[in-house]
Image (cartoon, rainbow, N blue to C red):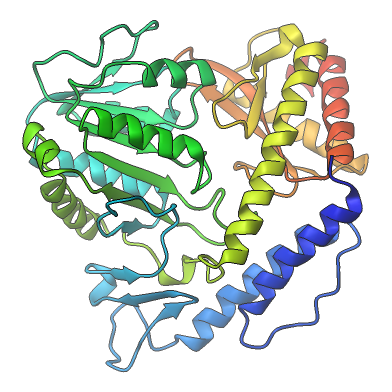
Length: 428
């Protein structure tokens, strides 16, 4: 259990890390409240972005100045017109794997990364199957259905049995970190010998998560080539939402594994770079957090994600007890958020209204909660949620990095509010 004093001390370390990246650091006293923590971190993030633009004013989209040497903290960039050939050198957002990884391809968002990857696969595969897990990210499924006609969308049935072991058309598994814990575990118990590629969306796992290592071990066992796609807006910027940034990392594979599969990683990476170029989806140098990569950064990230996961377990137990029939999913494999259902089915508008109303009411009561469409913050975040597999709408409550006692009070207030507004949530 983390006390408010220990929490504010830890947050002061995060603020000092951000502040230390400024060319002219400010005086940053220890914050006295959660509101001060939130304000200080977002203000410092804005100051860092502004400073980057002022310092790298020659590094324009047309790259007119030969003397431009754009950087962002430990990251250095080289590119020509509109970053079509963007090259990035700097620390990895993942733990270093034995055998290493190929150069990461950075994009303007996580969706830009997976879109470019899937479109690039058409250059290597005429027709194939892409197997997805129940509960996978809705926008990714929509992308495949609407714009990736060469891949047939197949939802994995449970129990999966030997669904991944068969031969036939090229087969890709999309393993999403946002599915339920039971579904995720079931996938990793499968025989993956029939897969030609694993696309692993790691967005909801910390960069040094043991689950990432476990998935990579599973893939190595079956010699499956792996591409890890990620949105870095979520867990990689100490809750300050530094900028829109995504990536695809092609994990190095053995020579035997490369020969055994119909999808060649090197060719796929080359085609993806071309897709990023032609779609105009390259990353912006200003969106690379300059505070990434140090031992202090990794230590603070580990501690804040651990706090979120601890709070998530407390919330799941509380909501299971207090909102049993009104809980949609309490055990996502990432542990970062839960979803709540109404007594009568929502549509999207109803779920959005409920998320806004709950945040508004509890915020007015003095709790650190906002209506925001993301997670990993120092405040609880509510938003509508659509399960693309069941077509059901619910409200997502993203668990924050807060001191234990304060979060438990907020979780109890959420449960009380949710129960009290079940008469007709359509009128909130």
